[in-house]
Image 1: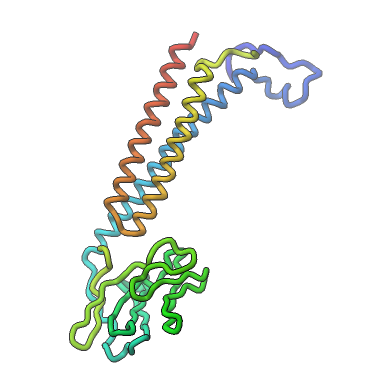
Image 2: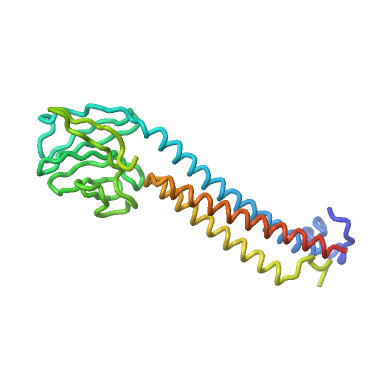
Length: 174
Length: 76
């Protein structure tokens, strides 16, 4: 409680709340503004901390994926043209999809929709990679978004064909 | 007016609050930008947004210190 004398001391006829909390109106406003300024300062600090956390996580993730191991996905003959196989790369937490495009090219993506991380499916009859959760669709050749709410393209995985085998060798953009 | 006068003039306080709200809004945009660039694995851009956010935090602190000093000067 403040030492400032009350300009309007509570009287018997005042409402109960005014008798219980006899605070000067001017001082109350002053306190509210002060608290609001404090709140804005703390919010600013919280936003900076959040941004820093995101940056640190991104840097850590980049360092971690800089040296990903090679993984044999399948033999070339096991993935007919226009078909896909599902695998995990670089570990069991990251489901992925390898697609044999019409024309012979192999492409691979993380099997997580960039909207809300639902697993995506290859639909050769519609020439798209489809997310059944919210009707998102991606271009199988590039991973770019074709339709729906996903905000970004699918995360790509580098693949190489050596002899008769297909290998995942890292992430696109890493 | 009831009670004592606020120590900071209303115009100063109003300008201060609006400035801090705008700074907070910009920092929120930067946070969203950092999340987006992080998802796109553009680490350099993420760090740029972090540096800008740090700059805005610095400006916020400077403004709050200015308000504090000015209110101390006006104290009877």
